[in-house]
Image 1 (cartoon, rainbow over the protein chains, first blue to last red):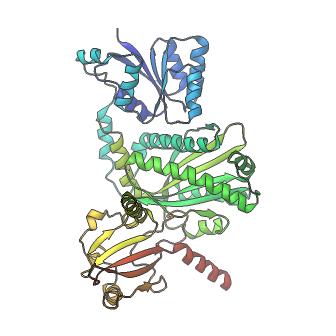
Image 2: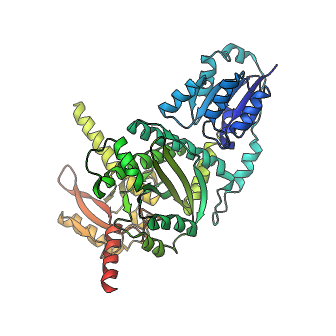
Image 3: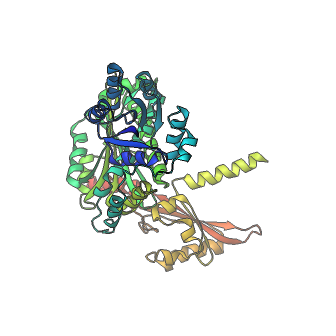
Length: 355
Length: 148
């Protein structure tokens, strides 16, 4: 009988990549689930002897799935596959009974190593089986996506949304890991929003910074290999006291002190995020000097003055939250429309390697 | 010995990372060196510009104007400075902050320095390109505030 395998991840691209990373010749029956609830149902239906489980998902997240498996004593071996590489995340899932943890992005080598390590498959067995692996990946789907990119006048990210989402997820996990290490506490990872924003929508977002006096923002330009954009970190002033405390900031928390805290957080989150993106897409990004918005520059003026220049921007929005402290900060990665042709090619290539 | 090599390596890495454009030209204005800043903002890799004439790659640069500056550096072995007030920019790059930046282009100050060979001859020059867009933006805002 074929071994029932469950891949549970909200990202279509991640599910495909995972399915593709399974060892060749492994005799399995793969079931795909798009959130924790679906995944749990599949496990109960006997379709998940081995489960590859993402942590950040809508409806029911990976932690909740692990809890349910533990409580109901369901027969599933769970390997967590996540972009959240914080040590605390690792400890949590281990405590909840997960077998092991694989960092995204997955690869054939990583998966095979883990499966060997726990004796789930053995190499000789695999070599003996000549069957091609279970094919779940519609390569034709990828082929049709490719043909739609050439329209450079109005570049669309829609065919690549899943790829962008996955790149954004992995980068978020890495950035959060650095911040978590610096402040020694667990950071709750949300699902990043990847969207094309019209000018007016971004104006609304920026205006809310200005309306809301208790908001501080840092922005920093980045550019490289035909891709340019800006990272924006928005920080609620109410979070400063807690954040300063977590970071062991000693001085007085006046305007100057707040700026120190803001810049330290910005350096980590923006730097790590851009680095993770550039590593995944194999490109070098130069970073300009960061600028504090609102202090030296009035935001409303900024909005009115550069309205005409661009129409749309690709925006990745991440709302970091730190558990048990009242800290929320938003990281916004804005990428210019003329970078999209290059970017589409890069993410297309990234997830298309074995197609 | 290994300290020397390390230092050389650090220097190279700093020059690649520094947020300032560095270009080396020979007497025929062919590009001999092109750092990461130039690569990032022009989207042209070093191997794509190596040995190419800078005026062929950037036809919009006023050749007479810039060669005049460069030639004096060659003959006088003396630095030349170009400020954004003379020309907003030498290399046509976009604003480093394309979304929240007020200006469309990157305003530039450029310093041209002589580079001497081992025999003491000035065989090459280096163009050092500074992004001064923010300075220009603040200046404009002050002017507008005074007029208002």
